[in-house]
Image 1 (cartoon, rainbow, N blue to C red):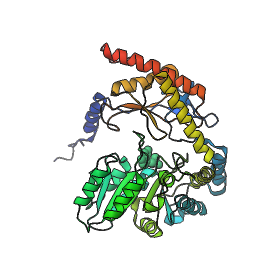
Image 2 (cartoon, rainbow, N blue to C red):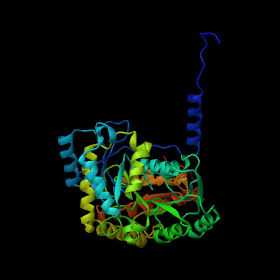
Image 3 (tube, rainbow, N blue to C red):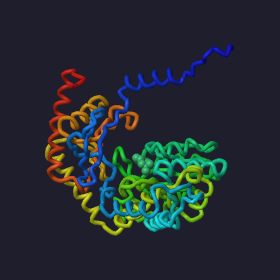
Image 4 (cartoon, rainbow, N blue to C red):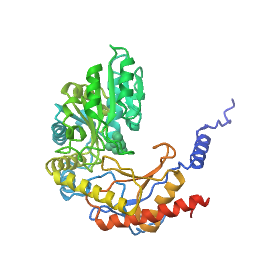
Length: 421
Ligand code: PMP
């Protein structure tokens, strides 16, 4: 090859083709620029890119800051005070000067919340799942991980990333299938059952007690993702395992500080030995800069408030019940889940995107469209998460907009129309 020859790397062409395919399948992701107003949650400023000036306010119905803790004045103040005291960043990994007394206090608080001996912070809930599962499942040869079919991408990344481990997928929340699969596995292989409590897309809830009973019978470790439950369920917001009185039966409880607690970060709680092992062996813990002190201080304040203020949970579930009653009265179909998540079935990707777009443009309401591959084709939906801050008037606006749009869009569908400007 002469020195003047240029060899083209194929990746740019690959990207072009892959993006065209994604677009053709209606799966191209467009982000909606919405700036949360801390003084008026759940109101956001809607900033149309590329226009620079702020647009009119929008009521958001799909946020995962379920209790609005991220805008609580005490939580904000804790962050501001920590920045003033300790600066903006952590300054290093947990080993390299990144551990402050705030980190240790938050880990102790989370361990106490779940009734476990110890807790360990990660930079996000995603990383806590990915790093913990991968580390545990590569620790000894022969691990078999029994994974619920609907487990989150971060759990799948950890399980699939564990070289040498076997992943056995059991049907979603199907304990008969799980038991059959456990029974078929070699008796002496190290086993784990990895599952979630509240599944965020269908809003259904696992039977933790029965899963743990199976785990005991077959000698399996239990790993429970309570990301969509912490702060919301249980006397102190310790999740569904706390509500059901079975937290002590779960070996590892994983959670996020970004949803019910409204801030950022992830964690696991477990026995001191398990936590110490993860602290010593999990690459995703060891080799990344620690969470900033401001984030940790805000999360600590939030967890403390949420633990001792059950009225926040009561208010949330009262609002969810009121919203469901209003949908019901207006004849708007919804999936009647046992959780705080209210999915509105739409059943078609294009229609789902269109309704979400029209809610925003015509009604200044924001509800996320959930399409394939997040949910199976034909089960596309809008995912609504009513919270303590959604007023009756806001609910009436949403219910009436949904009633109009669902009717119009299904008529359009019948007449063969497929797109609306
Ligand atoms: N687990 C589940 C079930 C989730 O839905 C998510 C995020 N939506 C995560 C873990 C990751 O949590 P985080 O956003 O804190 O990274």
